[in-house]
Image (tube, rainbow, N blue to C red; front, top):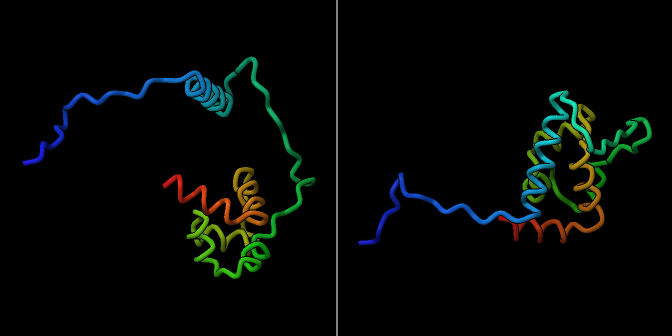
Length: 118
C-alpha cells in the first residue's frame, strides 16, 4: 500500500537564493509604497497615459485569426477581459500591454512560455 502524506507532515522549504530574497524585498517595498508608506531608495516611474498609444487588441486577435474566447484561452486572459478591451470599456494595464505587444509580434514565443510554465 503506498504511503500517504500526513497533513501534519513537515515540509521542507526550498533554499532561498539571493535573487529570491531580492525579489521578495522588492515586492515588500512595492506593497509599502502602494499603501502610501514612505519607502526610501526605490525608483518610481510615472507614465502619462495621454502619451501612450492604445493597444488595438481586436487587430492583434484578428491578425491571428482567433475568436475572442480562443484568443483569451490561448494567452491566459478571460473572455470578458478581451471583450471589455475591444469594446473600449477598459484598457490593458502595463503588464497586459507588454504581453499583448509580444503576442502581436511573437505569438509562438508566448504560447511556448505558457506551455513550459504550466
